[in-house]
Length: 280
Ligand SMILES: NC(=O)c1ccc[n+]([C@@H]2O[C@H](COP(=O)([O-])OP(=O)(O)OC[C@H]3O[C@@H](n4cnc5c(N)ncnc54)[C@H](OP(=O)(O)O)[C@@H]3O)[C@@H](O)[C@H]2O)c1
Image (cartoon, rainbow, N blue to C red; front, side):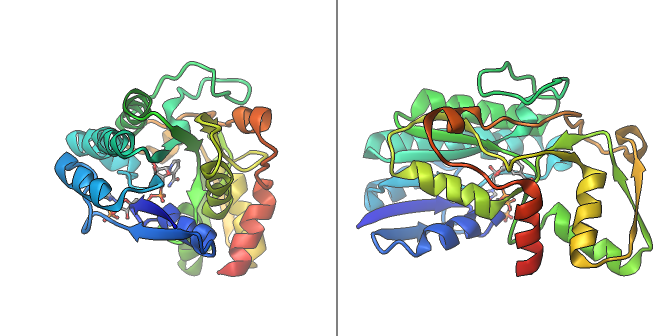
């Protein structure tokens, strides 16, 4: 029986990982969220890992509130950098594989073609910088790791898709930015990629997003179309929207490492969102 420690198990990805891998009777899950295991506490992390002796640690915990990170800087670095450091130290000591999730926000967004894993990073805000520091911690402290950068994630939890559907209940029109480009990705697709990598020794840094790309306004139009909503989408610019944290204008990721080293293919974002809306 292989034991898997999942952190942040109540988050969107934590739930999807449980669904995806839950059917595997060879696995035993030790599910933890901040109440059971605060990943910022090295002593607690080591204590649990020594007791469980996991096959793998899947880190689904993060400080994901991008705007809040701009002012909650210490917590952003504690959760997004020190947390993965602690888990990586525990993984190394117990011989476990370390799965860590990162983000498209590690890039500056000035690219003109999809970013590869080999491209230079340049985070624009605290969230991206803290997540990049987390990647560096994992590389430094874990021996056997998979770092997967994903983007525009939606699943079982708070996310953009649900926010738009909620707004459509009370609004004839929503204002959504059309000058940020990326690839909406379902937690189901990402959990599938984690499962694909987990039992291999194909370690390293991977991009893991659905195929294809769009801007947020186009994504919203597709969500409304699939959900049969009549709400109009008014396209606005990032400057007009005026969020606290800067966001990359262009953050389309190429799943280059996955394509070079595996036969795993993410679904096209249209198919993934259709499946998600159907399942709601
Ligand atoms: N959401 C996106 O659009 C997106 C895009 C790119 C990359 N990612 C990355 O994908 C991964 C999964 O994201 P997600 O959307 O599933 O996140 P999520 O839904 O926000 O879940 C994160 C979970 O981590 C928990 N957590 C926070 N601090 C913790 C701590 N100190 N110790 C243990 N658990 C803690 C949270 O608890 P509380 O809710 O109580 O704080 C929450 O249950 C993250 O690494 C994120 O950076 C997400």
